[in-house]
Length: 380
Ligand SMILES: Nc1nc2c(ncn2[C@@H]2O[C@H](COP(=O)(O)OP(=O)(O)OP(=O)(O)O)[C@@H](O)[C@H]2O)c(=O)[nH]1
Ligand SMILES: [Mg+2]
Image (cartoon, rainbow, N blue to C red):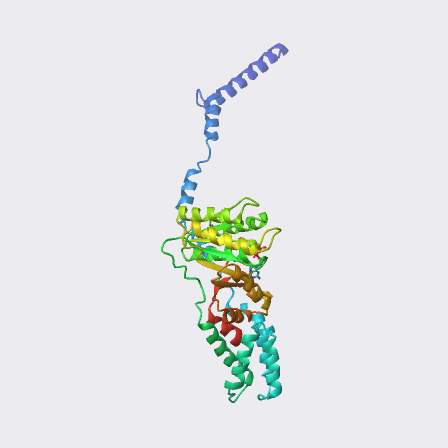
């Protein structure tokens, strides 16, 4: 065959094959869709996965969980009486008496040792003497261990000694609110802390409150009360450093009337300052509160530190010369073996015990209860 004919035949076959391919491709794609389809597909792919139905599913879940915080909000309970008086019972005069009477029957030596234990106790000499006399003349031992019988005898007598007074939360009987509680006491006894705890206590009783930071000598002292106010959720009137404390009290009294609160609690300085006589200062504050709130203060609460034992009683005498103290609050009963001082205060001074502080926490305060106190002290 002629080579040019062969070449032409190959060329013709190649062309034919090309035509077949083109026709085949056109047959598999719809007309007009060849390029447009990419443009259409892209927008479809861009459409976000539809999340709405999922969200709707979330909303359907029952909203039960928010109830949990209610449990956390529940106030903590102050230390029980027996735990608060544990050190006094186990290390103080009660423990010594218990030990003295743990063996044998009463004889001269035992009475002598009991005398020693009582006279050196923080219940004070007067109270100790009365109890000793009663023990000598009235106590009649029965069969069985002597120790528990003596403690029961003392329990009954002390309870009787404490019973005549109006202990516990002050009545604060006022015709028109606010009732004013003025808190006084030597520095460091626990005034500011106790005011914070009292505010929390009264707030839990449904009372509205205002606090007044009258310790204008120390900025830290005022800050401390402001922090307590924030913690408890109670407003605080704070003066300028160095401002006359009486003028802060006057402003606070007026503010308490304006706000219509039930109780105003006033914090005061606890130490003597250069050129300032604490006694005169307290007298002035007392007077000025009365000018702002007629009839106030309705309670002058002396804060005593129970770890100071009989020294606390001596402090009380000084304050009573300055202002008409109407009740005692005993702080730090939790950390001491000198809890017996409460008996001395009530009996020797004839003053009711309002609250006791049993720790540094917001709930660590209890209204004083003579029955619970004596039971925890002598019987455990
Ligand atoms: N363990 C215990 N500590 C307490 C109690 N009350 C107060 N305190 C602590 O005693 C210290 C003194 O308390 P404050 O409230 O600052 O005393 P204050 O009387 O206001 O003192 P001044 O402002 O300096 O006059 C602080 O460290 C308190 O946390 C209590 O009941 N138990
Ligand atoms: Mg203070």
